[in-house]
Each structure stands twice: as structure tokens, then as C-alpha cells.
Image (tube, rainbow, N blue to C red; front, side, top):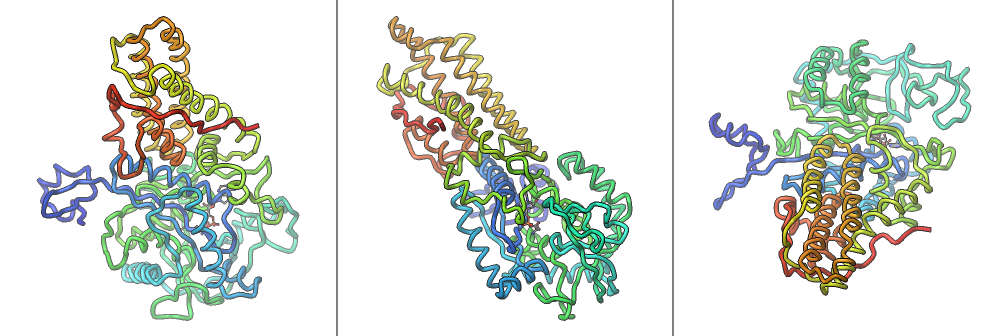
Length: 553
Ligand code: ME8
């Protein structure tokens, strides 16, 4: 597998430049565009919660959508096992950090299939392949002259694994992130999480972050889509413009991490370690130009934007590697109006949710309820309301009544389309426009707009039923018009299910199976083969309706 621009002559390159990958086998040359999507790697000091589910589901939807679009997708998730926070959590439990990591990794690895997460790889930062990647990254930074030894004397927030200067600390705010009082007279608080920071005084290696200030500003300004949403981009720009200090990138006062090559009493700063996962999972350093790099999108939460949009691009610039195309910072969930926290004991756990709702319903709700990028509130009443109105009443009901009529009047057989009228053409045009608009929204990670747009077609379908009243046509014996109406309904529902497939893989595969009368898998389904209007032929047999979304009481 080669990156085409490296191996091809200029003239050939101009022909294929929209493709990132070229597969060469003796029979044929297949051009496929690469799509690389990542989630953050999650700390193993705590078990998975709603926030972890959210990013991973969003990444999964993108991965599934791009697979259906015919791209060569690589979807990565994993866990962040090193650092002081994990070491302290393990000490608290009286176990070794690796034992804690092994336990928590198991929780993630068993959770993701339950949520239908289709990741192509799962990276652990304790794995030899990752450690080799991190040490190689360190050497690259060192060889580029961007690392020097010094002494760090300032503040550190263990929960955020972040360094702070005295002036950045906000000791005026005495409310911790979980709303509990902290002793702010005695302790300095982290500006981000509002928990106590600790003073560090130790020998440390530094990364010349300050040297990249101008290039970072230039890159962000020249690439308006690099950081999304736009409000986050402005935040990052003003952070950089206020002046970057060199970054301490090693610690000597604990040992749970990747040793600095050639100076093993230092462990590499956990964020340098963690960020490198996006490359180590692709085979870096063995594969110097990993096939899927650069990433198309790193999905992250808003709290870890600085690490991804400042430190990571600067590291890549120093290492002379391409930058990711986009960093998207989503918002945070509260639960029933309250901030989730361990101390309040209200962190919403996936097991609790999956005991009550199908994974598909949770996936739909999380991406529908709140615009990606904004904060939002998770409430059981909102979930039930959306489910009943959009899934049970709209799409579920339309599928049921359409298939029920087709079975009642036509034994489940699609008839030929007679003359198409204005109403039919409007429905077709709407379904086709939906596909194009969904593609645009997907490119911008605007999941709620995708779902809103699909729902608009479903509502159009429900109006189409009312306007055409197939039961009247059946009574009148107007077979030609009845066949035409039923065909348009079923074909429209098929396209709706196809667009919803990345969001609700199980339910929509079931919906497509009822319509297409065959099993639907990643291998036998794509936008190219199934995305056009009119794929179903006259005489096609549909199945009997089986309700997908029974109403919730
Ligand atoms: O930050 N709503 O890991 P992590 C939405 N290891 N998202 C939330 C949330 C909430 N209430 N609470 C947390 C780390 N998150 C690092 C990442 S990547 C190289 C290293 C999100 O387990 C949070 O925004 O603490 C973050 O994106 C993610 O959970 C992982 O958090």
C-alpha cells in the first residue's frame, strides 16, 4: 500500500490526487480514499461513563458512514494507562497500575461491542508497539533540537495531568468542579477542573513549544476547518496569542510511564505519551509514513482541546509530520441538570443505560438531542419524548403502515411505477436532496442536522401517505396509482434506512431487511450500489412488517 503522492510522478499524481491511498495488485489498481477517525484514549483510573460513550459513538457513526461511502476507514480508540493519576488510583486500591489498567481495559473492551462500536483497532499505551512509538517521537523531537533539560518549579493538576503557572491559578473560586467546597484558602485550584493543584520542583526535560507559536497561529488561520466548532478555534487562537511557554515533558517523582530514551530516571509526560497513540497505532515508527496518516478528524471533548490543538500540532511540526485535518471538540453532558461527578455519584454508567434501552436508541438520542460541539443535558424524559415522537411515531410507524399496506393489498410485492405526478416527484427530489445534504453535514460532524434532515423526509413520507390515501385507491381498484404510491413509499423508506444505518446499525439493518428481503451487512451494502432512487425492481418481494420501535410508556 502506498501513499500515491510519494510514489507517483507529477503527471500521474494530478490524475489521482483526490485519493489518499492506492492499492496495487497484479490484476487491477484500486483507488480508495482514506478516512482516519479517532477518539481520545480514555484514562483507566475510572470506569466508562456517558462522556466516553458519547465521543466513541460519534466516531463510530462517522466510521460507518465513510465505509458506506466507499472509503478505506481506520477507526481508532483505546486507553490511556500511564501517568500520576492512574498510579495514584492504583495505589489507593493497593494494586499495581498495570493491574488496574487490565481491569478497566476489560470494561472498555466489553462495552464497545454492546454499543455496536466498530473500531478497527484498540490501542493500549502500555503495549510495546505504543511505547516504541512514543520513544521514537521523543527522539525525533530531540533530533530536531526541540528538547532541552531544565528544572520545573510550578504547579501541576493531577486530575487533568496539566501544568499551571502561579498566575494561571484561580484561587478566588472556591467551588470544585463537582460543586463541593474545597479549602481554597489552603489549596490553589486548577483553572480547568477547580481541584487542588500540587507544587512540583524537579529536574525536567522541556519541549520548545514557544518556538512554534507563530507557525501554529499561521496554520490555524490558514485552515479554518482545522479546529471545530469555530468558537473553539477562537479560544485556541487567543490562548496561543497570549504567549506560549516551553512545556515540561518529563517527570522524575513517579515511575508509571514510558522512560525517556537514554535517561531512564525520567518518565515521559503522559500527554506526550498519550497523543502519540494516534501514530503508534498506525505502526509508527516502523512505518515512517503510516498509510492512514494524517487523521481526518480527532474527536475530543472540549476539556482536552489545548492538548490536541496546541501541543500535538507543535509536536508534529517539530517531528516534521503532517498535521491532522481536523480537531473537533464536543461539549459536555450534564445529567438531569447536574454536573456528572464521581463524588456526587451521579456519573451515568453505560450498563445502567443499556439495561433500559437498546444501544441504537441511545446512539440516536445522544447525537440527536444536542448539537455536537455544544453542552447539553441528558434526561430520561427527553429521551422518551424523542423516542416516541421521532422513532416510534414517525419512522417506525411509517415503515409499519407502508409494509402493512403493501402486504394487505399486494401480498408484499412491489408493482411497476405508472405515471409519476408532481407529488411523487417532490418526494423523490426530497429523498435525493437529503442524501446530498446529509453528506455535507457529515463532513462537518453536524450530527443533529443530519438526523433532522432525515426526519424531515420521514415526515414528508407520512404526509405523502395522507395525501394519496392508498386505502382509498385500493377500494377504488386504482391498481396503477396504488402500485406507484406504494413503490415511492417503500423506496423512500429504503433510502431513509440507509442514511440512518450508521446511527442505528441494528435497527436499520432490520428495517432494510424487511424492505430488501435479504440480510444487510457492511460487505453487501454501500451508497454507491444502494443509494440511488429506483434500486428496487417491480416484482420485488418485501417482508411483513415487524415493529422496530414500540412506543415507550
Ligand atoms: O482526557 N460529557 O481521558 P478521560 C461529555 N486520557 N464528555 C465528557 C464528559 C461529559 N460529562 N466527561 C468527560 C482523557 N468527557 C485523556 C485523553 S487523548 C490523547 C487522551 C470526555 O478518560 C472528555 O471531554 O479523562 C474527554 O474527551 C473524554 O471524556 C476522555 O476523558
